[in-house]
Amino acid sequence: MRSRNGRRLLWKRAEGRCGKQFGFTLQCGLGYKKTIERTQKAGLADDVAALRKLYEQDQALDAAFDRTAASMARALEERHNLAEELPRHDAYFLFIRDEKKLLKKKIDAAEEAKRRCQKALIKTMNEIKTLEKLREEQLAAYWEEVRAEEAKDLGDLVSFQTITDGR
Image (cartoon, rainbow, N blue to C red; front, top):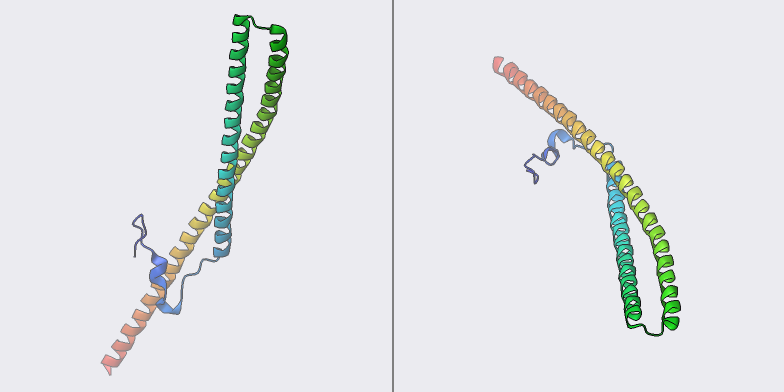
């Protein structure tokens, strides 16, 4: 039996041989780490989506600022009643500035949360990689033991045949 990358799945072949089956001693820990990895990946996806939404809000505020600046420029060109226009535009510019400051803080916090999640995910993935290497080492040791038992059984069989043939 072969996996996707062409490696033989030795542990599948091992079932039923010599009355033993391969069992990775840290399988529960490996399964737990993989569950944590899936959870962290989902959390990272949520953080990225939240960050994208904040960036969209930032772009919307920039667009509103540009529209208001254009409106102010038109009012200045047409020389409409500037006494009425200026306070309204100033108040809106101040509102946009304050909103952008708040949004900048939210974006910084979201980026920090994303960095922390990425760091935790990388740590978990490295732990999984280590556990999988340990699993492969244990599997190799298991196969050596199976081969030794088969060689012993074969030697015993040959010895028995030699003894019975010699009678």
